[in-house]
Each structure stands twice: as structure tokens, then as C-alpha cells.
Image (tube, rainbow, N blue to C red):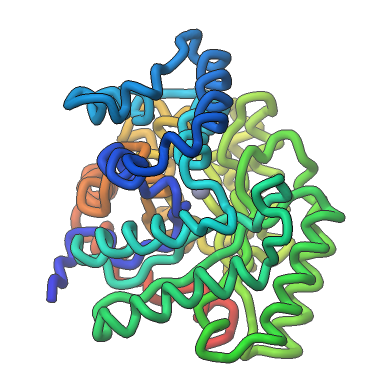
Length: 382
Ligand SMILES: [Zn+2]
């Protein structure tokens, strides 16, 4: 058993398709890309809009240069806009759509196999609520969750106790739609056997946050906490990406979004970069005030994704990452990779970056504390 502590072995913030490396995209796409031609054309069009170059996706599987072409177009390793990142992310979505074909299950298994072989022991995968598309006509949430949880159950049995996975379902930030999705998830839990539903441990709000109101999900969060108290066996952790990007909003608004997530009882807050971003004195005082309040008066954990934040959230260099400040202020933090396949990183390289920022002792202390922040623990289920 690989128990290397010098890596992130409990990974609490990854998006399933963001774990795919160029090699994975090449391997898993090789036999089915022709069936996805129309979707790949839409990807190419979007890519051209974001980067000014139309990617030649047919070249990805044409010859021995294909893998290098995928890597060139897919990897996101330099500062990028969220739209550019999402454009790259749309390649695996185009190739492996949520549909009756269940490409997602193949992706899940493939990614879990790699994570287990890398020595990870607990991974919480975020994945979409089934979108309404022509491909998902007649495809139910039950089908979606049953399939994902079944694969996780099988994989657990094969892993003989060395690897466990959990699912966090990403819901819409649009209030009415998000609530309908949440209620459907709870109905699925009520109707499902314990050995299956135990794998769904959280709901997540992710994606581009700047175009929706932070408090739009207030009612959903309230409902979740009431449901958790009423039926702790089915409790779900509340995960909210907040204060990640400040592309079109001031840092102060990003801080307010982090504060709002904590007020709504987020068990873990994704990124919260605004809480430590460069700013003027007045905003810095606000950062200190909100940071102290979260540390002292709430139980929220901040998920710090160093590489992701350097690529997408305007953190100018490694040593400027706010995780150091968060730790000094007494905030509870964990380290995570977010979308390691697209960022070209893994749990070891990300840990090495954390050591550079925090020093080896502090980085190790965070790694050792991370099992306390599993969704099952924070939601009160375990
Ligand atoms: Zn994320």
C-alpha cells in the first residue's frame, strides 16, 4: 500500500472531467470521437471564439502527433480567463456527454484507477446534475446517480479498503432550478438503498459565479440544513465555490460572496481567493474582519487549490497565494487540485507547491487534518 504522506492523499475538491489528462482524452476518445463529430464541431467553434484559432480535432486521433495536439489545445497552464478554461473543459464534455451511452461511467472508472495507483485514498468527485439535452431525453436522475454510485461501490469492493470515493453533485446556481434539482436528489436518497446512496455525500455549487447573486441559493441551503438535522443518515455536505474569480467584480464583492457562503452554512468553501487577494487598505480590513469571523464563529473549511488559483484566479505567483495568510489567521484549510488533468498537475506536484508556500511542517499538518473535513464528517452523517 502506498502511504506517501508527501502528497494530497485525501482529495476533497476535484471535478471528474477535470481529472482527465490529455492521455486519458486520447485513450478514451479514440474509439468514439467519430460519433461525437457534431459536438466536437461545436467545441471547435467555441474554441475559435475564445482563442482565435480553430482546433483541428480530427488530428487528435489521426497519427502519432495526435496526443501532442490534444495536450497543446487542452492543457491550461498559464493565466487564463474563466471562459478560456471552460472552453478547454468543453472538449471532454463534447466527447463524453451525459447520455444513455454512459461514457461518464467509463471516465469515472478510468480516473479512479489512476488515483488509486497514485496513492490517493479518499477522493470526492464533483459531477454534474444531468443537463437537459436531446441526448438525455428519458434519462433520469435515478439512472444517473444509480450508475455513478454503482461504479463507486464496485470499485470500493475491488480496492480492498485502500481507496474510497464519494460523489458531490453540482447543482445549478439558478434558484428555482437549483431547488428543483435539490429536491429530486433528496427524493432519490429516500428511494435508494443505503449501500448505494452512501456514495453521494455532498452537493456543490460551482461554475462561473460572477453572473449570479450569491444569496440566490439561500433557500436551498436552509432546506439542506433542515433536512440534515431531520435525517442525519442522509445528510449532505454543502460545498460552495465562492470568491474564486474577480474578473468583473471588485475584490470586496468576492469577499462578500465568501462571507455569504459561510453565512449559508457552507461546510467547505471552494477557493475564497478574494479573502486574500491584493487590494487597497479598506478592502484589506474587510478581508481581516471576514476571515476572523469565519475562523472564530463558523466551521467552514476553505479548499485551497494553489495551481488552479494561479491559472484562473489572478494569484500572481506561488508565494503570493493566500493559503499562507489563511493558515496564519486560523482558518481551517485543505489542499486540493480542482482540475488536475487540465492543469497538468497531480497530488504530488501540488503538495510540493504547498511546501514551497507553507513550509514542510505546515503542509504536513494540513494533510494530516484533511480526513476531518470529509463531507461525511462535516455533514454529521459519519
Ligand atoms: Zn472547482
